[in-house]
Length: 159
Image (cartoon, rainbow, N blue to C red; front, side, top):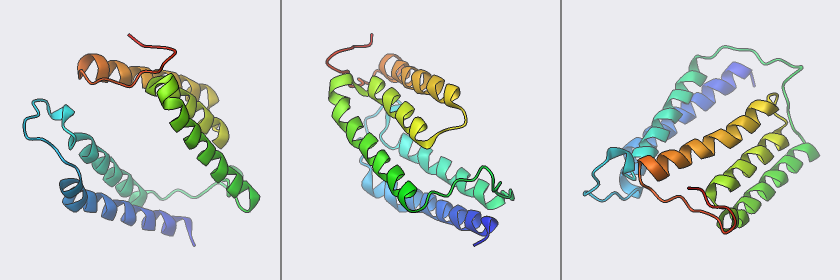
């Protein structure tokens, strides 16, 4: 299968799935009370944002014409593919176990770094910086601007 053909198929699938979410999935499966004052606090807001981003990714995949670089492209097969799958499953289980103990912010930092390390990113410094900054910025926004309580851990509590 050609690289462009794979991108086209993935793009069409992403657009179709985003359309399904917007037309059927979100209206039927996400409950939202009618008395919510701020749009950003509505349970419908973020699913629609994610569906829109999925549609943008689908459009991007439809219009990209890049050829893969055989030297940098990784095709995990056999044991390597299964090792990555099991590693990701272990990271997910550890994330669920650590959430009540460390809290959402610290656990997401560790999960991000572990996943970036497992995938052997080309930019480890940027991954570590994003792993630290993004959860803190999201915590600051939701806890102090939106007034939404973020789960804290037993050991370290954020202000």
